[in-house]
Length: 236
Length: 358
Ligand SMILES: Nc1ncnc2c1ncn2[C@@H]1O[C@H](COP(=O)(O)OP(=O)(O)OP(=O)(O)O)[C@@H](O)[C@H]1O
Ligand SMILES: [Mg+2]
Image (cartoon, rainbow over all chains, first blue to last red):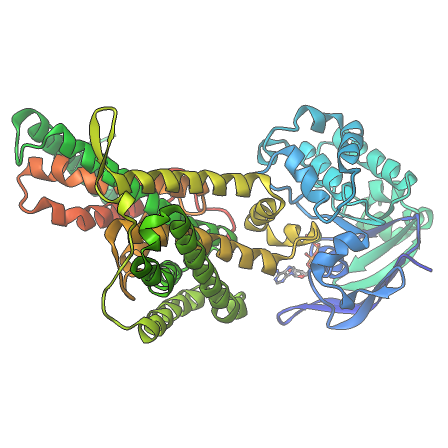
């Protein structure tokens, strides 16, 4: 059984038809990447998975359950976490408070231990734990947003352009953390414009263009694909 | 640069605003100097000045308590809830008429003042919260996606609705608010006489403000409110029920208004169905003054407004030889509102309003 399955999903912003029948699958334990240019509908796809938007047609099945039965706020405890585009940290809260917000729905006693684990993953966050998130650098905010998402102990982690606006070294670091997180058992759906990097770490990939999946294959095969090389990798 | 070029580049609106600022500052300075050093107007004793200050601060505490409701709702919804004054009125009237009158006539009020006050606060807070939750659910929630002007107009409608409903319940006559005997008169603190009720109100409002601050900073619900105020989508991703949190925010604001209602009643000793209007507008002024959306700002704005209303007339206006200055405190309050909106729309502690919002 796939952990996530989108079947013929259509979504609209008013009259704008943003997703025109998107179907995709993510298997347990995979890293799957969704690549596409500006306005292709990548963010919309993730928002639809998180129920921040509802599909007008089609279904989102998570671990065998149709998500339309859930309230959007119930998905965190159901096992889905997202690092939104632009990171979405709570700027007026401290680093520690942001991490605690990630565990908002949890009632267990291991929250503090998990915070320590996040600090081990991102030592920078430990140094900055009392700092207001809004005063941190873009890279630090990205780490915080990822740490916060992990605080909910997700089965499926959605990442919306984690490399956006970061220096190459930082992008490397973020991507290797994604691999680590995945190795520890979290399934990842990674949205990127940076196709080069994301195909490097992904098992499989989908290419989205103006609301439609135009291509899907193994990451290795996609890297060899002529169209991908031209449009997304800049190789002539 | 030639003079004519320089003249062309000058923004005349700016110049006028600067002149305006200068005139106001000069008026304030002249007023104070004439009052303090040349004895203009009435000669007040130290006791009079202390009365002005304590009345001002305790009045300010009341403004602050009410202002919290405006500022917190603005924080989560970017909407000015003009019905908030009615939440306050509903608590004051219901507690006065439903329980206050009985407490008074049975003598329980004077024999058990503390229990009586707790009872009054309980009824007042409960009423305010119910009124607030109904207003939010019925009048505001269906309009969450409507253009901003729509809920604003609805708020004014809701305000009329509650006023007239309470007039229907309790009549339009002015009714007394019960005050325990032990709160009447003056108390001597460090050699000075203060009005007891003013001191009690001041202390009570400071305690309520601190409690609210801790609630918002430390509790789970408080953090949810702050998260919703920052970003509703991300708050949802964290598992926060945004609609529920917004309703809680209204309830918390109404809770504070309900406390303010009892303290207000004990200070002014009367209630009426129109009593929410002026405190509502004043508290709104306080919230804007402090920086709407900011909780410490609302507190600061409240105390500042209360103080300036009480001390401004004798200190500044009398120095300018204006007649009947104590009737002019509302003029001070609203002049202040206009000045803040012109010169510092983000208020004392607020941030610039450039970012996304809504
Ligand atoms: N809030 C909105 N209102 C109206 N249209 C929107 C809104 N958000 C997105 N769209 C439109 O929907 C389409 C898909 O947008 P989406 O944000 O999903 O693209 P994206 O692939 O994430 O792009 P980017 O790489 O720039 O983030 C675009 O045409 C966009 O203009
Ligand atoms: Mg996007």
